[in-house]
Image (cartoon, rainbow, N blue to C red):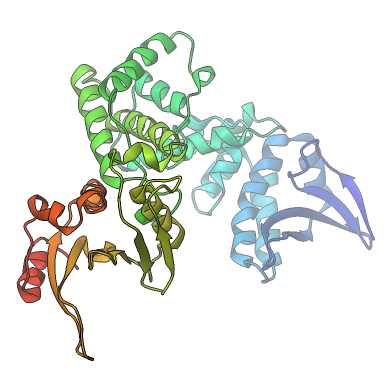
Length: 411
């Protein structure tokens, strides 16, 4: 049984307990193999307890010095109690100058102190005791996160001005640049918000009329990577032109914001919105590389092109990237190869009779992105292989086609 001798309002700050008559510092840190929090204890003396009671700063300094030992214990190792006990006197009982010197020699968790209000400038100068004069029992994790984000930027040589920081706070990317951006006007200093909104308006104006289309090759929620790159480049170019004082981080976050919002719109837009007004007049069969088949007939609720791309969305995968549209009545079809950015058109030259195999003509062409696939599929649906004549070039020799594909950087 353990008896709590001293604890602070914040449940995470280490507490002092008594176990079998022995005073111990107890703290939770890290996690075990099942992701459950680990708890560590080690003995302390009455003189240490007195300082922990009276001096929040020293209490927090001890916590920050013990945490690296907990990290070293990992998911199942034991805490090095001797090393933990060895921290007590130098951290809790030594003079401030000696504590400062000691912290220059040992590992410690700076982020923990910053979250509890320690003075950042003083910490950076190695004056840890003085830094703890502003410490609080309550924790502000965001403060520590922002500190680490600023350190990462400094390592990249990036310095943010007030407007840069405000733009990043507006998009929610000040701390984590990979976070999906949002519009958070309340996170911006009201004095800077009008200027931020002028920068955002520049980004909005730059991408007006642009959109990011759905890309069935990437599944049901897939969108066109090329459209994203085009929109991001357009937005960033306009913002850099009109606001040359902005840092790259601020410029990129606006491109990211505009593209993310365009992607959200694309995912709620029906596939039919991306297809040309074309309708097939013959029955078609869609197949994939795994043997699945879907029939389409004139008069169906969805156009042939939309039905085909829905079939692709449902079936596409890393091991299923070849899809075919066949017009049995005409004896022709197309086969799209997503893995190779190419397409083949296949026409029947001679039907098989008397046990003889039919003879086919196969021609290949490289495809330029999702828009290229849409154009070719719509043309085939509308007029068969003959409608593809002007959308080539078409190469009958497979070896020649492979050379052309490799020359373009194909796999």
